[in-house]
Length: 596
Image 1 (spheres, rainbow, N blue to C red):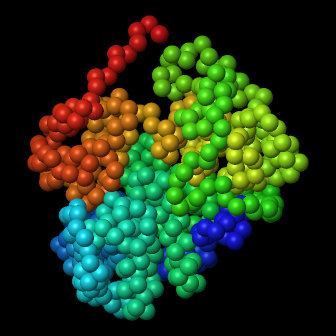
Image 2: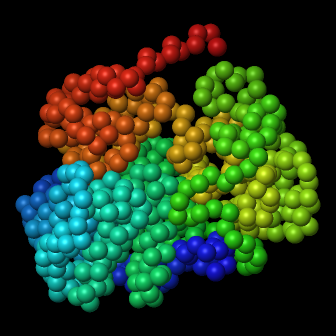
Image 3: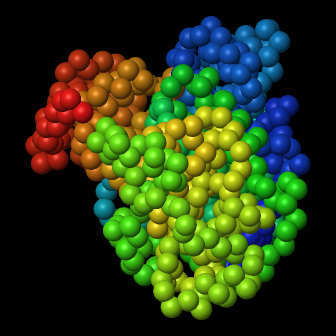
């Protein structure tokens, strides 16, 4: 199996683009998978009980290019109002498919399926009541719980069959059931098996109008889970060719949220995986659409479909394990007095022109420091056998990059370089191979897709961003991509869910307030969650959590354990700071330098 060695395959080739073939799933008038284009969707932030607000927000999303709209239905009472929302949209001439988002409440799913075109269920909490209990499950106990799930899930499948309603079986990394956690752990494998349990029940009833998703806030976990799912579906047989919905959950806001989304979704799209996408930003939902559209239409479109696209390459065994993150090993060398490779921190490089732009004001750059000037470094076209052989014959260890003249796209070129050059040579990653600048958002997403996906594969010892308007912008983007990929943490990391109808406080303003108070805490991971659904489970591996518990009331978490309850919202940020201080993670911010 070319390119994979003995590993299972999640795509046909690591070195040539091919879209994964799937069956078509109909969501109202919109087809997902099959020969359809990749679909863009989003989720309402309005209260589901507010019919007019939901209709107005939906119309705005559709006008912006949204093709499928999701609405939360946290109880049966909320789900009942989907009838009025759907009727109001149709009365205004809008037949966009509506997806009901269900957590915890099978009766809400049954009601919602009467009115919408698709129902999303989370296998981790559709029936299971997650208590974070540590217990041993015997095979009989495990089977008993599966029987209880089937008893609750079968009526929903049958109703969806009768009405022609589609379904998303959407696993989230942080909300796996205790049963799954006991047997598989909090792992991508557990995410996959959680979804397959429900898929097997659906298939036993000859119901196939469903899609899968494997969402996580950590792009590495998300990428590994989707790859593992696809490999598992391939092993199960050709009739397990269900479409996939892609998303990095709780990506956050601003540049960080866009970078995380591009790393996770862009990486998979570039390998031909994904049939519908949702970018989850802690912003008004309408701002998600241009980001998703840019990923689908431009950033994730491989050069292999362009003029140079049909270049065929030899397919050596992969230099990385696509299902488990391990950084590519190399020798440790000194480059301009900076240690590179051999497990050292991944470095940030600049071009000579960029260095000239910032060399006299490096103190003003703060954390965004240039570490290497990439001028006359070793560059190799991995398609050139003689050049690769000459490099491998050199006794001297050197930092090496792909030459701009390489005729395949940057991700596949670096995969090939990593597989063909001797392991002792560390690798410098470029955000592109001489492509023209595309503007701020496309350029940001392209750089995050290219660099982030390779970093998540464990490839790269230094990075170089060239397609930014300023040197300072390039440095900032490079560091933020390293942070988003989880390979170099230089600032506070935030996991912030997007607003939806379940949210119990203003997520945007609260997130900004928490950032202002804690943004100097390098290496601390803080989750800001609008409700209990996106609370202890969804924030997965955060150090501290700020979670809506009731209107105007906040619960605070350490890890997945709730430690403070029903704190008035106006006091909650200060109480969060106190909690961080109690656990020895707080330090006072340094004063701003004067006269620099």
